[in-house]
Image (cartoon, rainbow, N blue to C red; front, top):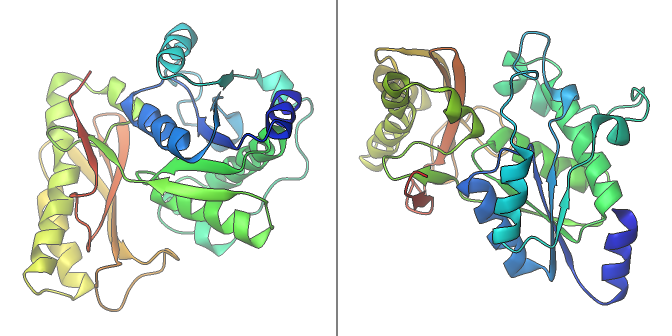
Length: 281
């Protein structure tokens, strides 16, 4: 992988990287499109990273379809599909790992201890192997994107991180590989997440700026049949709670629908207007 990337850079080509865990969907492919706009050659990595799964999480059952991934990557004109085995990327169990710091102690980090240590460790390894000029991430995984951006700044990685708006199905559900776990009734129930975010945004646009009141309104919507809310919080880009909601405030939400855990978010000043709506495939 590194030889290919260095050869392309010697030819004067900028390298764009889209890191994924495979089981590609339209949201991943929109990241590829953006990487294509920003770089001459696009690398898409596909690797289900064991370090970011807890002992009771779905690593063994996480959806995988390598043949379909290869077809979709080819159709989207990906220049290099990098799909290493676990043994190739982790030749030995890594003793040294990336410590994500206090930004990982809240929200997803609190719900999934050790998750972001695993995420940042594998992302750092991918950056070192691929040596991209730019890496493109989706905003749906907001905390992950902010931690990757902070890691790149704090550790002086020589690349740019770009965050792309969330890709949604036409009814508002944020596209995720885990949506494949949802049955028809659960799929309908999952719309409570995006409805809750819209309720908070509408209340804010109506003049409400108290975070506690906005969170209360969102949770009222999130408490829907078939949905088990985990959190709905208003935070800044540093993931800290805000004293007053403004256009830069991010509303983050997590809930379980059936046995599937889903997350979503919206920036109040943008709403979902900048998100990408696509027809369900």
